[in-house]
Amino acid sequence: MRLIDSHSHFDAADFDTDRDAALARAQAAGIDVQIVPAISADGWPKLKQVCASHPGLYPAYGLHPMFLADHRPEHLHALRDWIARERPVAIGECGLDFFVEGLDVDVQHDYFDGQLRLAREFDLPVIVHARRAVDAVITAIRKVGGLRGVVHSFPGSAEQAAQLHKLGFLLGIGGPVTYERAHRLRSVVATMPLEQLLLETDSPDQPGVAQRGQRNEPAHLVEVLDVVAVLRAAPRERIAEATCANARRLFKLQSSA
Image 1 (tube, one colour):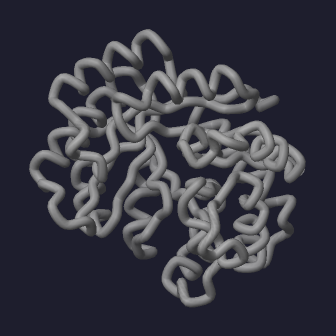
Image 2: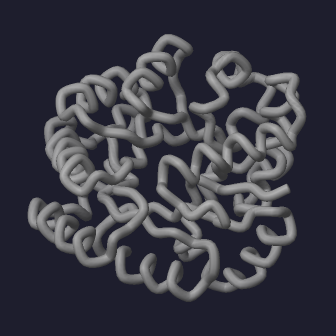
């Protein structure tokens, strides 16, 4: 049984001392593929190098809303050139964050809208961050139109999930679903269309309940799979097969990936 981690920051400095060992643990757990999204322009070269040096890692390039202080308007122009040259599997991580104080909403929208337009231009999916901003993200996606992608670590309601499904967007589900108190998220996961579901870790962040307070890593995706299978009353093999097919379709990966 093989799995795809649809959102892993495997280029993060947290893995610099044991990246090869962490990759071996992931592969031993059945995770052969990771989608690795960027957060800022200065990290794109390292992300490219990490993905090129390790099998099964696929890069996405973008500008994360939480790192607004690191971004410059010219980075959107640089992103366009980077995408045209490198041909990543997605644009991201991008989006909106209305939780962290001090992040200018208008500036966030400028970067997010610019990346959505690039996604449409290059016919690439977008990997979207939407913390306390799901409605605003939906509005932005509708405004640009002609898009597809994933809202990672989905934090919203069943109604919002249905709206995103109609827009061609999948939902990334990770460590938060393993916590029993996550009642709304668990309800969404139990009832959402299977073809909308992706599994993720968001490594090194958002560990599941079994790793609370520790560094997260792709090998822990199995815990997410097990909880999702229980919530949906479905065989874990079925969830694994469906979510891998969803990831391959969204990111246009080869079927062997």
